[in-house]
Amino acid sequence: MVVMASERPAQNAFFVVAALLFAASTALTIEWCASMPVMGEMQMAVVTAATTVERLAPAGRRVARGIGAVVVASGLLLIARACL
Image (tube, rainbow, N blue to C red):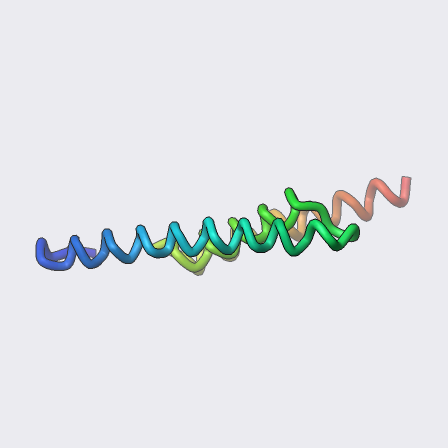
């Protein structure tokens, strides 16, 4: 994708705003989940980061499939460990 010189400041501003929203979202998610003992802060931060990367990546569909593959593999590993 070719980006025109006039579009670069707008694109940079978009990424700065997206990064600030991600940081705020992560902080709020961690704070909110502190009251919920079911899932820890680190797990929620990972889910938030994965969702943000999926939405902001230029190849979001490929990133989403990669994240899905990792989640499915992790689930299968947990099931296999529980069966042993």
